[in-house]
Image (cartoon, rainbow, N blue to C red; front, side, top):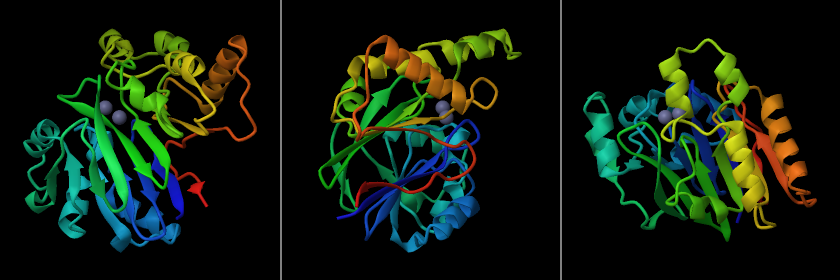
Length: 266
Ligand SMILES: [Zn+2]
Ligand SMILES: [Zn+2]
């Protein structure tokens, strides 16, 4: 079995991730236009027909921008919790009701050869979830919008072999930047986003040989750069005496363009 991952877009202007084997694939979030999603998949020779569903983390527009067209034009089933659906469907009336699939949290369900479990995270939406996905013996965790790593999320993040985790802002850039005070406070709060130091500290504390690929995701356009994310992580790791083994990789996900395909099982 093959298992491939690709980030089509990651950040406050749009989030969408692809995970697939040689037969089927799923999307996690649809925060860029449906046209871009179709185009990016086509460029990778992935047919839209093989996409069996889209998992939705929460109702913020950078996670659902393309959802309406994917449900109407591609009849794509979309999976999220009852409360998240409520927060999406009230303002977005054109999403096809035929695509609505409600899922519980902390309970596995099966889709296209993947065992999927949603877990709650802390973020300033009515409800937000991350996803833990098992396929071909690999454990994949995706946690992109969370103000801190709470007890409900930590075990899923620690269990991952392949981790997509937010590293949203550099603390100095945010403090010194020109965002209004309330927005700075919102981003830094326990229900906002993870800063570079928070993510790095958690990884330094919890990294094990089982974690082979770390993708740092959802970088802020105004308060972060890929170079600073990497520097912060490397400095934190070296302070803690952590040396990555030859198999472990760190990748910073592009904000507006797809990454190369990452092969989890070849
Ligand atoms: Zn977001
Ligand atoms: Zn959000």
